[in-house]
Length: 117
Image (cartoon, rainbow, N blue to C red; front, side):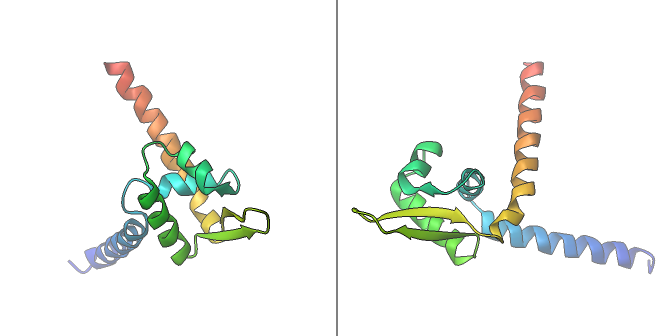
């Protein structure tokens, strides 16, 4: 039984990390927002067009939460009227490999499932 403790401990640590990530990226919108911003700064209306189905209140809420967690930042553009860009932070860029891998897996899965139908 002693030999299982290191494996169990590693497994439990992995579960903690997964839970922390799920706490940040819960719901269906945050990862999509992060994915959109990996392609460069976006205005609010750009994000609304790119992320199909997201409402204005939900987008505002999700942007605030991502900003609160240091993954994105608002950049106010001194223009008339004043405009705001949402930009992924250096820390937010660390999510990029996860987003790309998730996209790759999803596309592969779609092909797999469509091939069986």
